[in-house]
Image 1 (cartoon, rainbow over the protein chains, first blue to last red):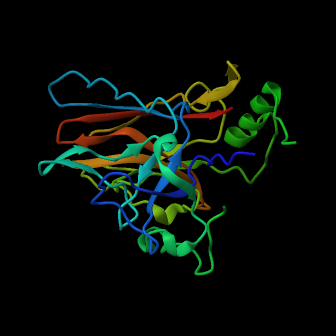
Image 2 (spheres, rainbow over the protein chains, first blue to last red):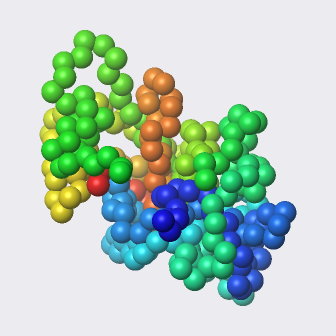
Length: 124
Length: 142
C-alpha cells in the first residue's frame, strides 16, 4: 500500500530548489508538516481593517501540501528581494523528491519539541 | 479494514464531543477556551498547548466555548456531503488597540488545559489599532 501522510504529520524531503530558511536534518533533508487538501476550515476568521471593508478571505490550498519549517519549528517564510512574499511556503508533495515520514525526534527542530518528554518520538 | 463512522455516528459523537449530546451530566462537563496564537506555526501531531504562544495585543482576551447546545453555543450537528459539523452560535470578536500578527487559534480544556485542537488561518491576520477580528468556531468530522 502506498504511504500517504496524515494531516499534521512531520515529513522530510530532498529540496530541488533553494529553501534558504528551511530547517535541515543531519542527513540533508528539509522538514515540513503535511497538510491534507480539501479539508474545510473548522473556523472562519476575517479581520476587518479600521476604516475599510473586510479583506477577501484568502483561498486555501487546493490539494495536499507540505508546509516547510524553519530551524525554530515555525513556518519558513518566502522572501523576495528582502520582502516577505508569503507567511509560509507550501509545496505539493507529489513534486517532492524522496518524501518520507520523520521517524527520528532529532530531525524535528528542537524548539518545537521542548514541551514534550525527552523520549518522545514521531509516529511513522 | 479500518472502522467506519457513518453519518449518524458522526452526529452523535460530535454532539458528545462538544456538548455531551443527550447525556445529562451532573458534573464533569468542561468548557473549551479558545486562544489566538501569535507564532507562525502549522499545527502538528506532536503538539501540546505548549506549542503555541498566546496573543497578547492590547484588548486581547481568551474566549470561552461553552459546552452546551443552544442558539448561542454549539448547534446540533448536521451532515452535508458526508461531513458532519457544528458551528458555535456566538461570533468571537477581538478589537485590538495595538498591533500584532496572529496566525491561528487553538482550543484547550478550560480546566484541564489539555490541547483539544488547533488551526492555522489561511493567511496571517495583521491586526492594528481599530481593526476587528471576528471568528466563527466550527468543528467537523468527515
